[in-house]
Length: 424
Image (tube, rainbow, N blue to C red; front, side, top):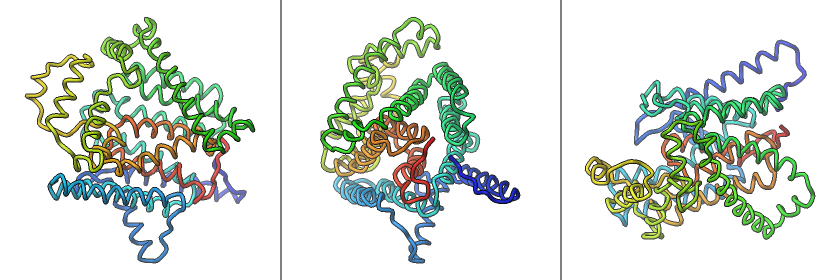
């Protein structure tokens, strides 16, 4: 919770003014410019912070960051080799190799600029609402077709978990009513993943807050072998949850309360042979095939292939996820990028196994950080659940890169900053 020092009254407004300007800064730095591809202003600014600190001899590299830095360096290296082997155009290759480099620069810049989690959390709140402003600046037909699904819903949910942390008033019944309202709005706006991730994070927060205090649980989490067994058990639990989701999303009660188009999609995914969670994610299947075809060096930056794209379209037609005609879609296709739709699969397809190690490290860091109870705040649980999902199932573009950079620093580098542990 935010701590305000016992000072004369005139100091208190300065505290809130400072937080307001940090919020505004987050929103302003979440604006895009087109240089070598899409960049956020914040990525440029924080890269500049790294350069300035390095020149001054004051650049700090947090110990929590060192493994990530090495893995990003390896990713950039193997990506460069992959692009040479796959004869990728120089301009495209530069953009591909620059992705892990930019991640590393942003991580370092943010970690060196902010010295406490409270300020960084307020900055992230500004970033989240900055995303909502982007469609008004650059235009986005998807956003205006369904604002809740394409940005507004995430901003509202993050604001809810933010106030859950900073305000005692926003806990208990007030938060419960907000939870039900947000889930209901999400389901009505074709945003079941928004609703699901929010609900899972809340359940995980209260579950681990209760169980995490038990001595037996702490012993399990401090033993690598027992932790591995526990993770395997959680995979089984996930399988059970998938079965329950199948029942939920084929129930008349739910299907009658959502739009017809969504009801049809829920039914198709629930009846899919891969289960509800993986059903409808044909990109994952295709990207796994592409990776296995070239596991060492991948297919190069922004890899294109008619074969994998046609396989993807055929998979959609076969499983009837969408009512489309194969030949019609093929004739209208003007891009042959290999479908990935996943942070980790993008790097594996582009640069091979070594390029994906950073995402494996990040995934395990988020997972174990939550399981071992290193974070006691709902905002940390929500961000961890969101990133775990995104690493597996969300596309990694400029928007994802900027958001992930801030979340990574906030989650991984708490001990480098003041206020290592949250109690709310």
